Length: 265
Length: 284
Image 1: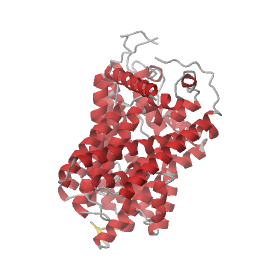
Image 2: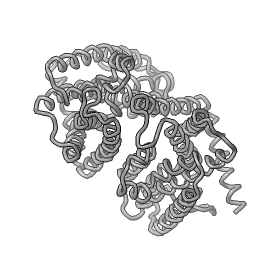
Image 3: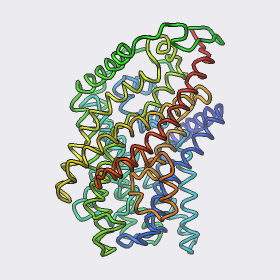
């Protein structure tokens, strides 16, 4: 276990050093993503300036929501950058490289790439959480711990969901369209108040498109402690992590090696 | 490929200009090829159109709750049905427009722009014709699926005038959007990495263009500000025209689109001539 952790840390360090070789590009993408998220949030500022609240959610709730989602999304896609292009690796035979080395294939593949723009998401999420705490007027160390836990759950469910969807490539071949739609769906749903949706829709958001585990549920948990929500978050994360790992390794048995020459630099 | 530092003249310089009919024929062929190419993958086309169902469903939930909470039949002159049909048209335009800036950026970065510049067509018009071929089909798919969903949710669409007026405005909206894409793509000649510009432009369209919320719901000062920017005429103009078609509004939308097209299109043209003239291609 310790060896695997050291290995992943070494991968992340290499990715960071690699990104620092193109410092200006890294910072430009990071700042661009922060601005991008901030402009998107202006929609909710305008919305709540006119309508004050929507089914019990107000602007501060949205700040908490954006804090958890952006941080979770940023950390997840920065540390496990290949989670957004796993289907491409599988379909184009690029898993050969990871299979030939004595390391956990899934972990190695996911952590081998970092996205510079994800660092911007992460920074924006932290700023949003800071703003939420400021406007909520209530902060203690336990809230910070809940935020950490909520983000961890968001990372786990997001990455697991992306792995799960893209593992279908092992069975059905090209999943570009499915991946793109699934990605759009989970990001879009996670950024809306869950109180907008009724029973059936809520069930979907906890199962087929688990956006509730990435956004609304951890955001509500960060704001106020609730034992039932904590249990839901932990159970949801564990189930999706297990499912993703199980399906990926099942699919890997069907993997067909590519004949293309792969060059890694 | 040319060696480092070598400069390439702007395409077409010193070459006899073809007749207008021949020139249009070339771009028509490019448009048609892209159209046929898109038609070859109907499942892909349908799958991409399904995204509008997701957005319409979320919007319906959001605005039904909002209208219900406000207790008003209309907000800023729009009923719930008007708002949903507006959002359907806004999303149909947004989801069907082809973002060419990424493709152009890659072509500049990997040097393949050199092959396109050598061809007997204009680099910018080539991309526009190809993009239009993609957008027409995607728009059709989004419109059919989006309209079916919204009809089920809030009842029948606006009358025939709305479809016709909005249709005319959508063509100019694509042109205007293409000019922005080209502007971002051409910036790759200077900065190489253009992703940040692309994200920000997309978000300006979402917010100041009126994709997420009709500009009518904005505070007065922000509404005035947004209407004085070009983004509103890519999305808000055609979508608002769709739910409230009138000759006066049609005239206003086309006039604004024409003005911004002349301004941004002119800028693109000047930048393109300069960029192509000082292009340095490295590699071999």
